[in-house]
Image 1 (tube, rainbow, N blue to C red):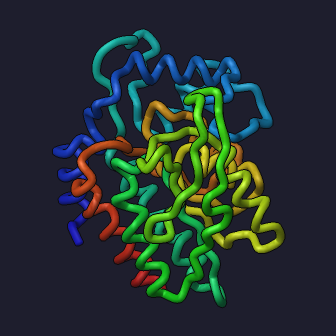
Image 2: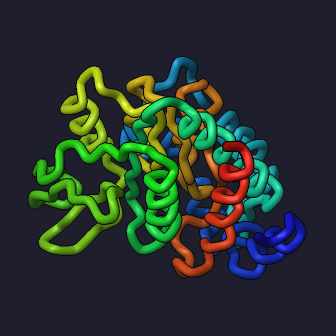
Length: 260
């Protein structure tokens, strides 16, 4: 496993954190959309308080390390690598707590098959090796959403849920698939959900213990964390080259192993 300093350097070099590819204008647009109540950016969550644009920006400064200057409206934005590492460690502690339970039930899902799947797959495999039962509800369930106009279905790879569109795993913010999965499970809820985007938001909204990954242009999960619906959100660029995520997975697995 890389040391903390080495991991920080890796995050900055690969732009998982530090100067990230997500531009400032995109971040601010999404913060404004969330403040205006756009469901696409709420990721299946509802909020107990009103979050203004300034509130969302202040939270993202605190939770992800974006620029605090409201006058900085174009160009480069950032994720603080220290926050990424701290959140990874906190996520590992939650996973260790779940795996320490008798016959733990975990559920993995991702809306970023071209990026974050590279973390979810080895974590799911590790959880099974540690005795977890990985839940795979609603496999094959199909639905239509106005955002894409044709049916998509839930499909699993290595016990990780994703959306399939005509034979291809696709990016999604949708909460409906996780809502269906939890409805099918009924009282057999997971002890922990490890997810992102709407998969994580819907689980947290339903009161299921949830840890998540989120980019700095996805403020909804960070608001969910601030309101106590999501236990941990790891800030990171969610779509760099898949192999770049390997040291992050190693840190989580090593910390969980040490705790068990």
